[in-house]
Image 1 (tube, rainbow, N blue to C red):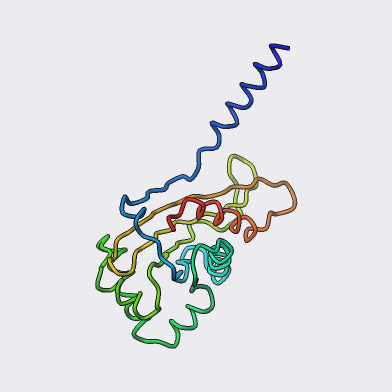
Image 2: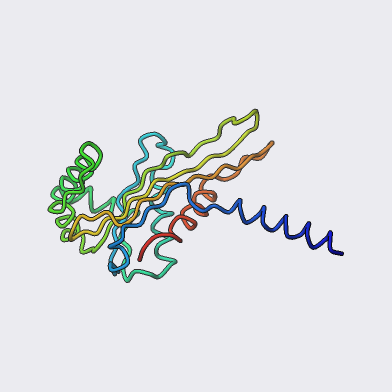
Length: 194
């Protein structure tokens, strides 16, 4: 009987050590004091995986709406349409993202303008890091991955950065990458300040 208990304990500890959380997650100390009611999800950066266009945006908007942490979630098709129609918003978002990418600078004036133009207090920037089927160690795998940044609109402070991915091995039937992405987004947003 004692051997069974020891074996069960070893299995439990091994299982717990495999649950390491996200590949990367960093919350700013100030995030504990920021509780936005309106959040914007900017269109996903799908440059490397254009097949994720639209799908990732919809999944992010659905995940945050389901959470009911925010009174208003602006994302998906709604923000894409607003960006198409409003030149000032499109230009401001583009300039903000360019500065962030090239200079690693979250411009507070531009972020404040994004918040004012959209009526939001924070926004998410997400990049699709993987969204494909591949071979890994001689096995077929489906891969999905995201990098997410949360910015407080009025100050430009980066409140949260996270990156994570999922792999699913398969033999014949390919896993649905959109379903994998939905689960991954939920897992990642569990760690998101709100």
